[in-house]
Length: 313
Image (cartoon, rainbow, N blue to C red):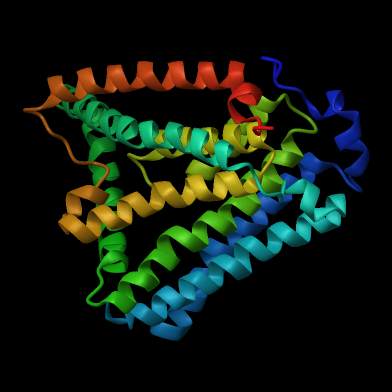
């Protein structure tokens, strides 16, 4: 595999199969706006219409089912429709093909390193913000605002992730890990990233897609970690040319958080604004070590991907 990522213009065989009927970039932007309005506002209005304004009193299992339904209806369906409308060949656009087991295993290693790396980053980031807020009223005001948003996100997820029996736990996994992995990957890494690849070099297509992906999640302290996760997912789908890989990695990231919450039942697990002042030195050292390991892993994989994943004869 060449170290330089090939752009669509450099891949004539693939490009011949995907001749867009309209500007892919314009279509991607329209799709991003449409899905944002449909899912965030349309889904919210639908939830209020069914359960009322106080969702804390709603039947959580029905709310989870509604969440699954709105993800499919307002994210997955538009992704497939727009891919068909703009490129006609949906399978090629979203890169729907089975990967080699070696590809899944190799790229999963990166996600396994990335999950604790980003948790350590959050610890360091939040400590820095805390210290800056102690010497600046302006930054303190921003921090107070972020804390309010983070508390709201925490309360929402705590309610969503709390299960009392095996049925509810299975439904939680479907709601938080399985459905988002499929729907968001089809839309962001499938349609949007592929569309941007027609205009921008692969790195920038991945970067822009990941930036918007992070914005969609409304997680104030977790913006950069979400963006990095998005970039790794975009990198993985580009290397493997398979959306199945990014779906599995996306599922793995979400599933780890769900299982950790099930086991420990600790709200700190989903609270991205938490600060561990006493252990900051340990967090900083661990972050640096994991960052070096992750960067080394990505460089090694990029240079040796075909050799590492080729099938045995």
